[in-house]
Amino acid sequence: MDVLKGGLLSFSLGFFLDIIMGTVMGLYVVLYLSVFFLSMLVSLRVYAEKTFFIMSYVFVCALLECWIVLMFYKYIRDLDLFHKFISVFLPQVLVVSLISPACFNTFRRFGDLLNVGAERSDKRARNR
Picture 1: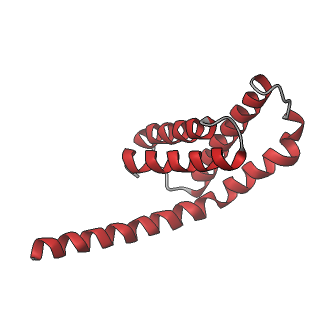
Picture 2: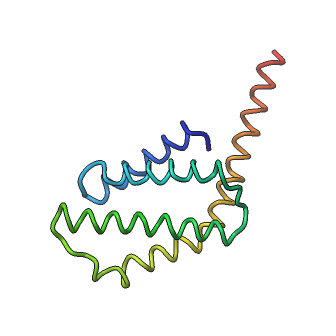
Picture 3: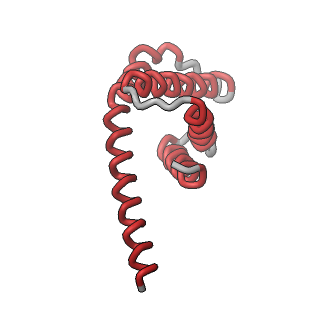
């Protein structure tokens, strides 16, 4: 995705999670925008279509997000949730990592369909 569309999508997802999770407003917005911009920087340097790279990168990003959330709760809310890492957070990270290649392919195909529809409407507008 380009910076504007990806940034808006990241902001929307983060805002939605902020509302649902009941944390301090802006935590997930900042997290998701940070992960998106980090991914944009990585995508400029690395062209990765391999399944293992996608899974590994998502695993690292999910662990980073988990670590930041746990640190936030420890230092801002004074809640120590590190004992829940193995039973709650690690399974979430593993599931997200395992399904990420299928999600990437699905979103890529969906994006291609949207772009084809946009190209067709542009051609129709030019022909009129």
